[in-house]
Amino acid sequence: MSDKNGVSYNPVIVEEDCEVYCRTCNKTVQLKKGDAIPLCCGQVMEIMD
Image 1 (tube, rainbow, N blue to C red):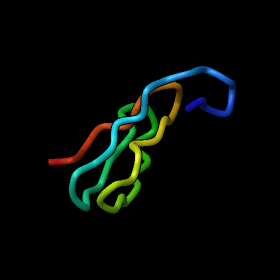
Image 2: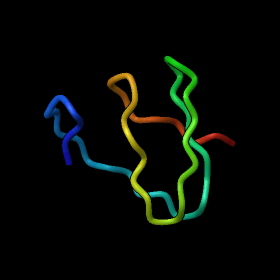
Image 3: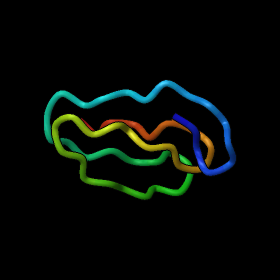
Protein backbone atom coordinates (compact mmCIF):
# COMPACT_ATOMS: atom_id res chain seq x y z
CA MET A 1 0.00 0.00 0.00
CA SER A 2 1.22 3.55 -0.69
CA ASP A 3 0.31 6.92 0.73
CA LYS A 4 -0.66 9.86 -1.50
CA ASN A 5 3.03 10.67 -2.06
CA GLY A 6 3.81 7.15 -3.28
CA VAL A 7 5.66 6.11 -0.11
CA SER A 8 5.18 2.40 0.59
CA TYR A 9 4.23 1.09 4.02
CA ASN A 10 2.73 -2.09 5.46
CA PRO A 11 -0.75 -1.26 6.73
CA VAL A 12 -1.75 -2.28 10.25
CA ILE A 13 -5.23 -3.85 10.37
CA VAL A 14 -7.33 -3.21 13.48
CA GLU A 15 -8.91 -6.22 15.18
CA GLU A 16 -11.86 -4.33 16.67
CA ASP A 17 -13.72 -1.05 16.21
CA CYS A 18 -11.57 1.78 17.54
CA GLU A 19 -10.55 5.41 17.16
CA VAL A 20 -7.11 6.54 15.98
CA TYR A 21 -5.46 9.95 16.16
CA CYS A 22 -2.56 11.88 14.69
CA ARG A 23 -0.01 13.15 17.21
CA THR A 24 0.94 16.00 14.87
CA CYS A 25 -2.44 17.56 13.96
CA ASN A 26 -4.76 15.82 16.49
CA LYS A 27 -7.09 14.57 13.73
CA THR A 28 -9.18 11.55 14.80
CA VAL A 29 -10.73 8.80 12.67
CA GLN A 30 -13.22 6.07 13.61
CA LEU A 31 -12.20 2.63 12.27
CA LYS A 32 -14.17 -0.59 11.97
CA LYS A 33 -12.80 -4.09 12.54
CA GLY A 34 -10.64 -5.03 9.54
CA ASP A 35 -9.82 -1.43 8.49
CA ALA A 36 -6.21 -0.38 7.92
CA ILE A 37 -4.79 2.36 10.14
CA PRO A 38 -4.26 5.34 7.82
CA LEU A 39 -1.28 7.65 7.48
CA CYS A 40 -1.60 11.29 8.54
CA CYS A 41 1.09 13.96 8.44
CA GLY A 42 3.51 11.35 7.06
CA GLN A 43 3.12 8.82 9.88
CA VAL A 44 0.82 6.00 10.93
CA MET A 45 -1.97 7.23 13.22
CA GLU A 46 -2.04 6.02 16.85
CA ILE A 47 -4.80 3.92 18.44
CA MET A 48 -6.53 5.78 21.28
CA ASP A 49 -6.86 3.93 24.62
